[in-house]
Every structure is written in C-alpha cells, then in structure tokens.
Image (cartoon, rainbow, N blue to C red; front, side, top):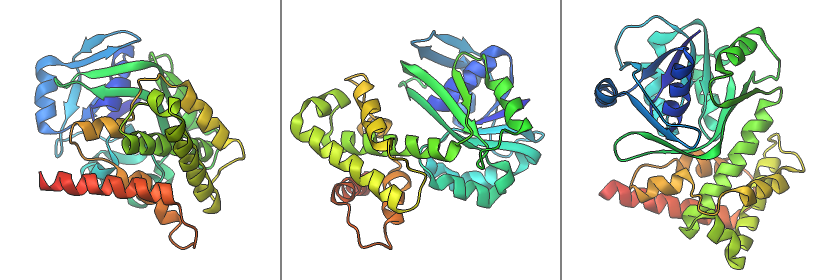
Length: 307
C-alpha cells in the first residue's frame, strides 16, 4: 500500500515516521522549505515510546507522482481549501482519504471535493508538538488512530488499511460507529481547547480550582446539549465520559490550541468552536460560555492579523 502523508508536522510526522520505520511505502507531502529540511536532517521524533531519526521520501506541490492508495491528511483545518487543488493529481479511482483532523465540518468539505466514496472517517488521540528545530515531540502514553467507513460497514479496503497500519508502533482500531467516535473526540477537544485558552492554564490547575472546574462542567454541558439538539450521534454517557477523560489527563497538559496561541500561530477557532455555534444558529437557544470562548478566540485572531 502506497501512503501519502499530508504534512510532516506533529501528527503526520509521528504516525508517518513510525510507518516508515515499519517498512511501509510512505511519501510525505510538504512545503518546499520543509522538504529541504527533511532532506538535510531527516525526520526526527522524540517520544516517550522511543526516539528515532529516519530519512524519508517527500514531494511538494506540483511534483509528479502516481496516485496513492491512502492519503492521510494531518494538517490544520485552515489548510484544507488549498489542498483541494494540491492533492487532485495524487488521487486515483481507488484512493482512500483518511483525515486525522479534529472537528466534523472537514468531512463534508472533503466528501464534496473528492467524492463521498473516497473519504473515510478518522481521528487520532495523541499529545504531540513540534520543537523549535522542527522535530516531533510526543509526550504521553496514548498514540492511537481510529478509522472506519462512514456508514459503519467493515469493508475489505478498511481491513487492508488496518493490516498496513497495525504493528507500526502505535495503536490502531477500526470502528463500526466512526461518526459517534468522531463526535466523542470533537466534544473532548472542543471543551479542552475552550477551557484551557479561556483560563490560560493547564488541565490540572483548572480542575483543581473549584470556580474554573464549575465553568468547565457548564461549558461541557453546553457543547453536548448543542450537539444533541442538532441531531448529532450523541449518547447519554458522552458528557460523563468526556469529564472522566479530562480528569485522567496529566495535570500539566495543555491543549494544542493553547500551545499554538503561546507561539502566536493561527488557530482553528472557526473550525472547532465556530462550527458548533453554527449548528445552533437556527435555534433560539443560547450557549453563553461557548459564545464567550469563541469571542475570546476571535479577538486573538484579530490581534494576530495585526502583528
């Protein structure tokens, strides 16, 4: 199976690098500057599961290559509009597209651009970031990919993909209910990024402070209620499950959005929190804490634009 990993950053670099280490046929799709860096020093990963440095094969926009069997998209959502043009030459009749982005809206975008039959449901659980030198730093025990057909069928192609992703040094699972899995992750990430950026603090501090914990629990309830009211696949246990997951995190953990803000980088405010509020736009229900978070993030973005 020929893989194209879109992005060699914190997520793509980690999972793609491990697939290279396993011996899979992997190519990375990156910017020209990143390609030059990778050609010079290779892909560097520092992980709690073991460090490695490996040469990789990389292409950049416009370079010729035959269509790939599986394209794994690991970039931020704000890069998607450009990708619809960049990826077209590398998509064949039988190409599978596996997005590992947070959120939900991107699935509709990718299905519209490339065809519903090509796009799998997918997500990952990992705590990782890029160091100042471009190396991947992975800092927690969990490093998991979950994927499946959007309609829940266990198809031959997803079994083949599972065979190639398995035994690569990370955990992987094929789900028969990927839409629910996507929303479970979406609610977790949206609430985590919201409360950490609003409070400008780590998970442990937020949960240990009675006032901020109360705000988090109200925020989580707002998000779950909003998604349920919009007809999304939300079950009665999702709110309690998300809170339990939050409580299980390392006290010093920060959200990736929070880390991006500290680095003065773009964020996915519209894709994560704005998309949630858009689901409620036609109702008369208000979600005051989520709306406050979104306003805070939009202020950050407006200030970033002036720098």
